[in-house]
Length: 324
Image 1 (cartoon, helix red, strand yellow):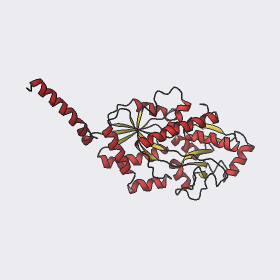
Image 2 (image 1 turned 120 degrees about the vertical axis):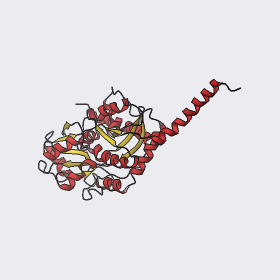
Image 3 (image 1 turned 180 degrees about the horizontal axis):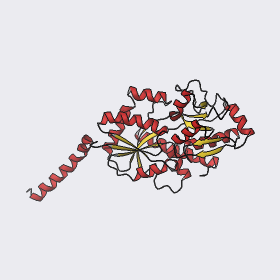
Image 4 (image 1 turned 120 degrees about the horizontal axis):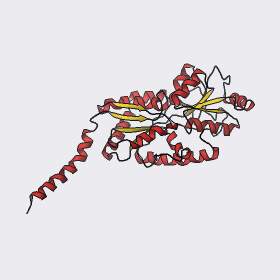
C-alpha cells in the first residue's frame, strides 16, 4: 500500500532526476566570467577576447574577461581553482601553466586535478623579435654573433618567470652558447609594449600577440620557432632555416572549468567552443595571429597537459632555471 511518505519520496526523486537536464537546458541564465591570468594586451587576450565575443552571440549571455596577472599566471590560476564550480566561471590558461609546477613547488592548485579540461583554443608558434631601433641584427646569426661578443649586454623581456617566453630565452642561450639578461614582466602585454618602446632589446613572444607589431614594422622578426613558416608572417624564416637547430617552441592557450562544474555544462561549453572555432570570423582572426585551428578537447586535451607538464619539467631541470 502506498503511503503519503512514499509519495513524497517518489516526488523528490523525480525532481532530482529532472534537475540535471533542466540545468543543461537553462544554462547560462546570467553572464559568465573568463579568468585570464595575465594583464590585458597579451597573447592570451588576443585569443580569449574574440572567442568570448563569438560565444556571447551563441550563448545569449555576456562573457566577461577578468584579467588577473602575476607570478607567471599562477595568481589567476589560483583564483580560478577556488571559484565556485557552478558553470559561471572558467579559466583561460596557457602553456605557462604546464611549466609552473616545476618552478613553483608551493602552488595552492594543481592544473591537472583542480580543473576540468575543456579545449585548446589556439596554438601559435613563438617568434624571436627585436626592437629595430636598438638591435641592428637582421638575422639570427647576426644576433648570436653580437650576443657572444657582448655577454649579458642584450636584455630580453618575458611575460614573467616560468612562462614560455622565459624558457624560450633560456633554451636560446643554451643552444647558442650566449648570455642574455632576463627582464620578467607581469604578462606578455607589458613585455611587448616595452620591447616596442625600446625599453628592452628583444622578446621571445607568442606570434598571436606580436604579429601585428611585426606586420607594422614596430618589431623585426628574426625567426619563427616552428617546423614551418607561418602564414601570418610568411617572409620570416623558421629557426632551422635561420641556422638555429632544435629551437621549436609554441604557446598554446586553452579553456578549463573549475573541478566540480556540472558535466552537462562542461559538455555544452566544449561544444559551443568547437562551434565558435569553426566560424569564419574566428578562423580569419586566428590566421592573422598565426595560429593553426586547434583540435584538442576533453580527455585528449587533459592527456596533452600531462605530457606538457612532464616535458617542461625536464627542460626546467636541464636548463637549471631558477626563479629570479
